[in-house]
Length: 234
Ligand SMILES: [Zn+2]
Image (cartoon, rainbow, N blue to C red; front, side, top):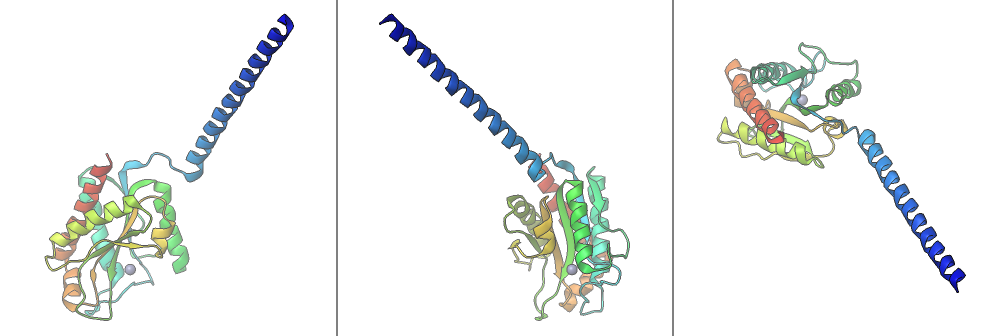
């Protein structure tokens, strides 16, 4: 009888040991997986004080041509440079994908790839690509901001910039819009938006966008939205 009790006690202890070992191994496995998840998705801490500004097109790629003959690449760069100045005055660091009239590679695909690489490597809190729009109906006008469909952060930033852009054009009723096909939106790991500041196909808007005064107004509005987004992440 005594032997049986001892045997039962030993069996219970043995079973407990197995359970403890299993739990320990399970805990270790979870820790390893968590570690892998962090390094695998590259979710290193983002630099909350760094923004990448991307002036679309450049060099032989002029982008859209305005109803007034203005070239998109030039308007994009001018607006982006003013945004840079405003952000830096607010002590935000800025990385530009270009600061002169050149594209970043010989082909359009390579050029876009390079731009997304710069955005991803910077691990910025936000990347903003500046463009101008065009449409077959001349009457269409007003800035519109695009974000990647699956990005909640991109959506927040796009809405803030969109609201800010609407303040400079009371007739602009456009909303921030989701998109899942644009290369830069698809391939960039940090939150990214494309700000189409206005329609070059609309003569009056093309004239405004080509003027330094309106470029500054647009830049101030976009910068305001960016600063508001940065603030919301802190
Ligand atoms: Zn463009």
